[in-house]
Length: 78
Image (cartoon, rainbow, N blue to C red):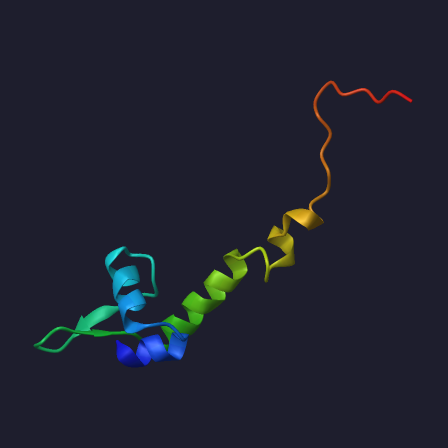
């Protein structure tokens, strides 16, 4: 878990909390002691997913780029 946290640039405690809230990257238990393990491919995929969901890094989600919508029954007066 420490290595995965370091790879993501976060604290192991944050990764622990995310795991228990089921918010973080996919993980599984490995071995007889049940060590929590993360696959590198899963970490990379999770980071890409977070990036796509963030409006600052995904121009399609940025509200400033949205086409203005008119209200129903709106009439412009000049």
